[in-house]
Image 1 (cartoon, rainbow, N blue to C red):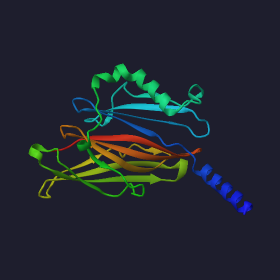
Image 2: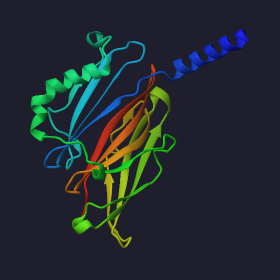
Image 3: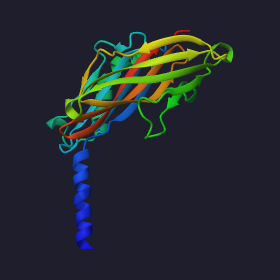
Image 4: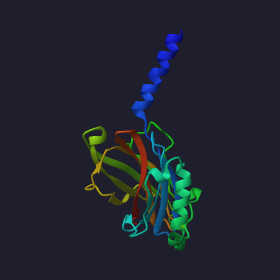
Length: 235
């Protein structure tokens, strides 16, 4: 019996070493007061070296790009060794406070969160369908969303990209717009998977934000990171 227990523990340890990595914690700061900008952050601590890291991003929704000089990062290093990701993030947030306070960001209210992935087994390529009731006079629209990835190779040597298709239908089920979101020409090394974790809309109902979970493979294992795609919705 002891031999079986020891063998089981060794097997579990081997599995842990193969799948080791770190999963980022998402910080959803939210939309600016005018609804044109979105701020989010993430933080964590590296596996094995236990070095904290943190990142804060400012996204121009219309351009679907970062606002120049408003991306803040603290990379893992000897300076952050032994510090939690939260400690490092709080220090970075304090450093960026005076730059970002002009946006007066607010987290999305419950009615602004159009979709949350509640199924860990849901594939990143599965279609997402939801209704948005933020239209004029309480009118609703139905959205059909699909993430389309391209992945070449595997593991740390993989290269990938993706885009998102968005089809909007009116209350009669008629297609009123079709949009392609993202930058399929941007190739990311070591990223082997993408999944939409959350979709939010600004108060005016004009800007959509997609929070994307990335699976990143490297020499230390599998890391989970987040990124944003944003778009102004065609009315």
